[in-house]
Amino acid sequence: QVQLVESGGGLVQPGGSLRLSCAASGSIFSINAMGWYRQAPGKQRELVASITSGGSTNYADSVKGRFTISRDNAKNTVYLQMNSLKPEDTAVYYCNADLKTYGFTRYKEYWGQGTQVTVSP
Image 1 (tube, rainbow, N blue to C red):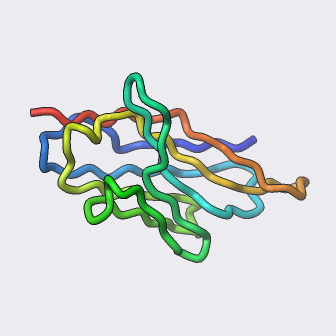
Image 2 (cartoon, helix red, strand yellow; image 1 turned 90 degrees about the vertical axis):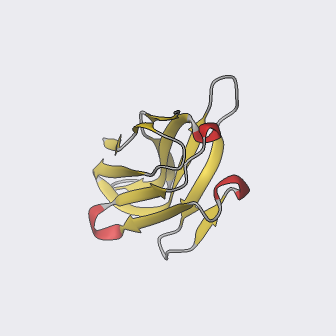
């Protein structure tokens, strides 16, 4: 059984910062890529940022220069530092991990339950 537990969401004013965390736990053998997605009301879920096990990163154009993704492989945890937040960043943010569990030979995608981020005056 694998769980991805997110934390760090909340309400923040425009221009403010938040840091999201996502810890993966369970019978994990190895983790490939980890990432953050978001879904605003009435919109499709979109990739915000991703990071490989080697540390290579990828960002959506809308967050480049404002958000930073990082990970602690020893803790199976991924972070998203969000600065200069805008109202259009308001969404539910989901953690994603491509990982392999003990006893299985294939990698599989897992999702967290989501954490609300609201940017409003």
